[in-house]
Amino acid sequence: MELAWKVAEGSEVRLADYDPDYTAKNTSHSEAKEELDKLGAELDGLQELMWAAHHHSLLLILQGMDTSGKDGTIRHVFSHVNPQGCAVQAFKVPTEEEASHDFLWRAHKVTPGRGALTIFNRSYYEDVLVVRVHNLVPEEVWTKRYKEIKHFEKLLVDNKTIVLKFFLHISKDEQEQRLLAREKDKDKAWKVAVGDWKERAYWDEYQKAYEVALSKCSTDKAPWYIVPANHKWYRNLAIAHTLVHVLRGYKDEWQADLEKRGRQALAELRQMRKEAHK
Ligand code: ADP
Image (cartoon, protein in one colour):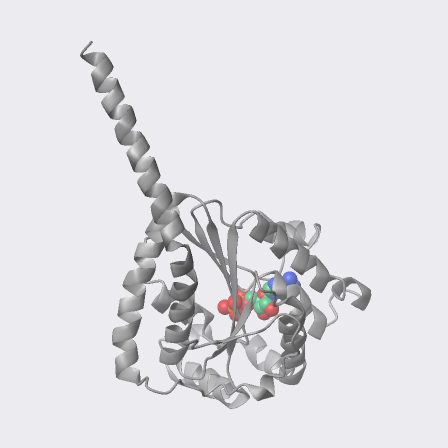
């Protein structure tokens, strides 16, 4: 059972068809907390195995409108994960140096090496989202980027990077509630940004830009998942669940490799001791 919707390669996404309020049947808020703890512990074990086996790396991309919960997801879903072998990269407005290179340059440098997990909080998808909405580069430049992104992700996958991309789907009303809540809560007021209200005026354009990016760039090997994100507890559960299910598929391979390495190491040790006693 999938808790987030995987976008099939070649399909045309219409976000209006996906309910941001959705919570799967048979899950309640309180059960979800328990379930998230269990999934978190399993994720920790799987990450440790991936780190030790050194076969694959994992790139996890989080995208969504302002307030959709990218930071909250990182805090809650990855709270169990060992910081060793785990990194978070945030993608802001490009610096002068970044802007003087191709748009994938700053991303490629920080993709995870073998064994490592890297979370992209926003990503090179901004170059077909904010850039498209505000025409920050000419259309003939950004239209080519969908293909370039697919090639880039294929390169990563061919080099044993597991690529998973999550779109945190909230409604326009929910965003308004969250922005207003920040103003009222003195502990959250630091998050208030005039820019968030300004960007909100472009809601429809952003939804369109997301639809095109999800449709053009979801592939079997590097899929996009649409995560219903109006309910934070369900968002966390859906992401943790998807992640654990994907990683479980690699567990046997990683374990078998570690056992083989363990046998080799013991054989070498026995050999060394035998020679020492000659
Ligand atoms: P947060 O991710 O928490 O919202 P910020 O408020 O600093 O962090 O937002 C980062 C901003 O950087 C976003 O508005 C995003 O659209 C912008 N950004 C990221 N990548 C690019 C890019 N390639 N070109 C222009 N703006 C970008």
